[in-house]
Amino acid sequence: DVKVTQSSRYLVKRTGEKVFLECVQDMDHENMFWYRQDPGLGLRLIYFSYDVKMKEKGDIPEGYSVSREKKERFSLILESASTNQTSMYLCASSAGTGVNEQFFGPGTRLTVL
Amino acid sequence: RKEVEQDPGPFNVPEGATVAFNCTYSNSASQSFFWYRQDCRKEPKLLMSVYSSGNEDGRFTAQLNRASQYISLLIRDSKLSDSATYLCERALTFGSGTRLQVQP
Image (cartoon, rainbow over all chains, first blue to last red; front, side, top):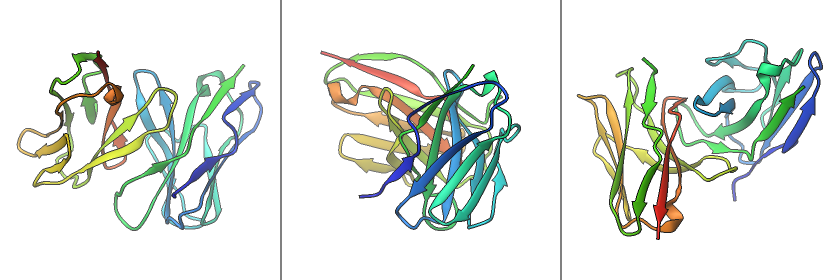
């Protein structure tokens, strides 16, 4: 059974804090993704990675960075959290090349006060 | 215009009804389209891939209309358990979802 896990379901941080969101997949997938989901805006791609140590900007990368040191792990970093980064963050992974079915983690609800 | 657009709904239909959603897209170069289902407070899960020739899986049919640049999802004989938000995806770009509520 395929699985994508995220380090926290709920997280509360203060403005200016550095925030790490961790994602791990056990399917040996090449591709990993970070999205945020907001009401009325849907899922928006922040960053993605097609290989270890490789990263590509998505549609809304500003204020975020990522790290992929191992194939199974993809981290999202908020260098200095701001209130407009309060959102649901979803990690996903997919196999192979091109755009394929994505498997999502359960999400992290981040609140920045 | 957004790259991928969906009617947010909600679509309220009685059990047993047939309901269809469309999803319009603006970039005709893409080859990859998907429908995902998302239950309340859960993550999206793949419902169907959308092929050029159409795709049918039980009560669900997905079609691609390249000329008019939209994909569709048809649900026949709606069940209460079909109540969810349906998201379309085109090459890593998602629509904001269409909410379906099937009523007894």
